[in-house]
Length: 580
Image 1 (cartoon, one colour):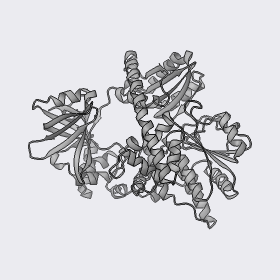
Image 2 (cartoon, rainbow, N blue to C red):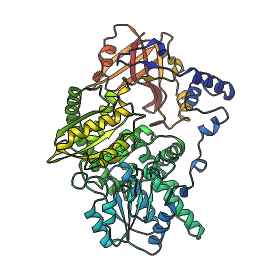
Image 3 (cartoon, rainbow, N blue to C red):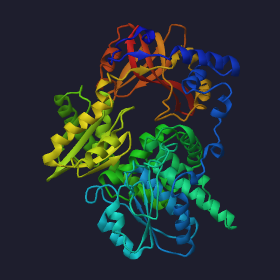
């Protein structure tokens, strides 16, 4: 495949890759058959959408895409036991993971139960003191005073802790990769169990919880009882799906699309308060969920009080919501500061070890367990390699890993644990957690490198910049973006379209803050387009474009609508550039 606009090495060292001939042909046919804008047809063609399916794809209906909950194994068992507990007024505890997916999953259950007049206990383990997932002490304590414990976003590998819950029944609603055997629970509902066929493997835990509540409402209807309004809870499912980086395909796309609409109503006090402290001044998008709301909900589990996020999402009291949101906002600022120092040290260590290996990893004394996952993400993005970052304390290290497309990190981590090189470990394809003995660190990372090399992790070069086509500044209108938005929402598994603006002249360029660049450009035909490049001065982009000297460039990035003073305009979120 030839380089797009003949760019073989951009200012950031990347090759630009345009759509294939097949995608171009399909896009042309779509445009002729549907009269949709050519730029939108490029996106649809890339997603494999035919002319026949285009209208349905652009208006996805949740009712058409929602699977029957009972296609998941153990769903009927879970629903039946859950409703029995509600009907007989038994005491229910919700044991949730400390991240966004766990917090939203817990909030879904607690809200549903509250609407049914039932109060439940929330338990979120402390990341540092207890680690991920159920532990024997906590489960045994909960079992003393509860009849049913529902583990959400955790529990699939928790054989010992679930066995310790003597006297209580346990239901697991999870999505993490399952082992060869399942714990002795009443039900383990998980699309990533080894005996599942995998057609719903892309669901996050909150979506699994949502499916159980759909099933519960259906059973209630059959018994002439009205269940809580589930549509109103889709804001939580959308937040979890985006924040957990679940692919926005199939039913996930419809869940997020509808959830964003629900969130726009500003009816959930916790999300209203969180949006206000994050200074969200526009209708919610996947960007807001992933980069403004998600990190703040996560902040409590990362460096503060583990249950803050779940409590914020569950509360129906605006004053409590405001107080919790402000606390999470402060914790998020602290988290950013901690992350920055760990990231600098991890990047230096990983660079010394070499960025070309199949695995990029770093480990440091006292690195906060709450930020190692974020730092692993940064390492992965910088190197296009799976990355693991570990914080060492005493005889052990607790770490987190992030993977690249096509490399199943969760399975490799699980294999390492089975081989005895890890104290414990698990996750899914793109993300995993682990605990390792200090004296086994080097051997564990060497073995992980070997396992990932077998999957081709060392073969990847710098990530190519994939482009959907070219646009001239005059074509980049608000109306075009509104059309393109119909193909969304965009995110993991469904990247937002990226366009190149060829042979343009920079008319204005200014450094903003420490590392950002603001500029405007045109093609000499009278239409000027504004652009922002975040982190420009962390790469060669910033210096080269600021000192452009009148040279012409190809610019590439994603288009977005900027709202300023009530006026909507298009701006380019610049990602790369090359001399024209």
